[in-house]
Image 1 (tube, rainbow, N blue to C red):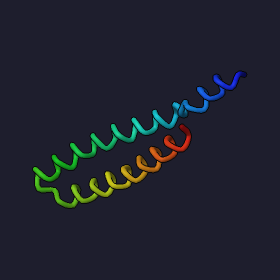
Image 2: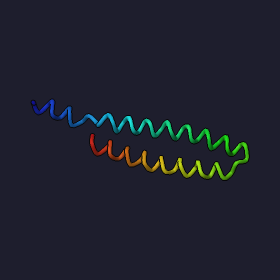
Image 3: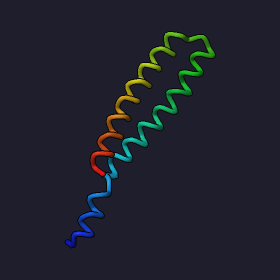
Image 4: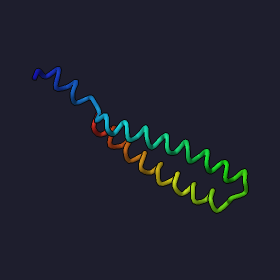
Length: 72
């Protein structure tokens, strides 16, 4: 393997991490829609529960983004 090809390989991120990050983003979008519906319908307890799920996924997404950045 030449130095150039090793360098190129080192710049590639793990596609599984990128897929995971995309999946988290899609989950967050869906939960935001659910939270909005709950708020409109006056289901404040459901909205609060969904918000907690959103926040947990955002933390996981930030962690995944950091892992991607470190692997680049």
